[in-house]
Image 1 (cartoon, rainbow, N blue to C red):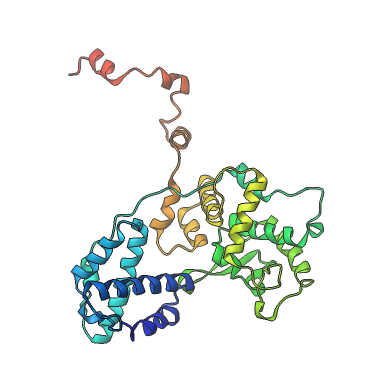
Image 2: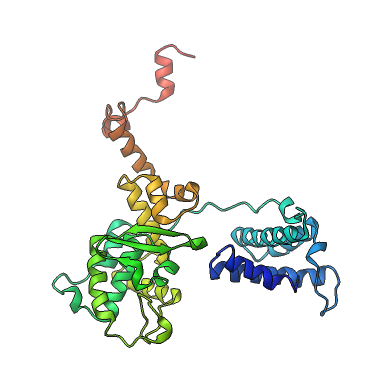
Length: 329
């Protein structure tokens, strides 16, 4: 494994175009597998395990060891890392033997994403209406632009901080986003976001930008490109100041963007395009309407939905009484 792993990681970065975050996660997972195999096979400390020797029982044993301190999602990723690595090894070996493909993935936990209500989201974006955008503090204006992109356009945290100045087209009202797998997509900008970005563009040139920041759209206090960690801290602080009691993070605003679009009647395919989801099934997690929402939708849309009022519903005759009165068994 030792001599193949660096080349495999280069393959992920260059040919597959995976994000740095994913590549680092796969690297950690495969290093853990290597350490496990050294002990599992009884190898000496300086003796590296051969990827060609790995069997399904080794993969299963490794995942079993991880069961006690890893979530199902983490174990799914570790299995994915092994499958991808052993596929790459098999291709270069000239066969299709991949023992990790014989192992079923851990069952995924279906958890509903954290979503803010529309008033909660608005409270995070509100600023003093009597203050012009250009009069806001530089940091406050930058943070407002970031929140507008997260909630108004549904960008991921990494996509926000990865934006360059040329990514924004204020005349057309759109942003060009480099998403997962280095896939580009165009996402509309809301009018408040366009106005905030226009004001930020004028102030950004006054900052002491460091050369390594390049064309970065958003800068930190030291003049470098803003990091995803700093963005998470900004969002959490903004939620605290706005009095939002939920755990607020950048992805919560992205979830809220998709959910509020869906509740407003947007097409699921359109939401998929804006979010940059490769599969529609990923977007379908936002169809978690409440029972009350389903009832209201039925009442307003179905020909039979409006025939009974809520009061009538509360006095609906039980089914067993209907059957008895009609003489049905």
